[in-house]
Length: 232
Image (cartoon, rainbow, N blue to C red; front, side, top):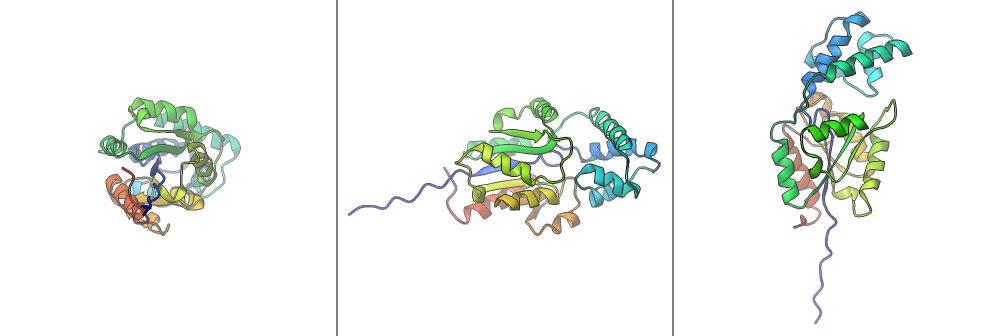
């Protein structure tokens, strides 16, 4: 009598977002934005308004805040000023993020990072906080303007290799666009409330939302493993 061997599940992969997710920088983004707004003719905004109205592409965010369309030179100057201001803030991870990543690695769960931050800057920031070795792949933005993360998500999963099953891929992010990008490739998105979008905005995505990175990971892995055993 032959014993049937159960198929070995494909590995679980966690794809992290960077700004507002692994990187604790929501206040930094607000401060950098507010430093640019007086030169454009409006007063600084509150964190609540930032999280309620933030969107991609960022140029559209500026247009909405100003209630007018910036010309190319105005946008170039505003973005350059924003980037200079943001660069003044030290790179720091969300509380508990490193230990969470180390725990996932110990469980044999692959991790990668996908961001719409400029690629070279992203690599520098990730190295600065010492997590490069915990990530199988780090991808940032190469194009000057990006309206959606979905195309980058498809390229990122393809680059991770044929062993990457979207249905066993957990995307952890902090914006509605992170959820839409995950859903576009058949991955499992879970959003957390400590990032660039308010909880009310996140709720409109129609995907699970958690109040911490750990809860987001636990929730997402439970969803994935409900369809099969966790790899050991």
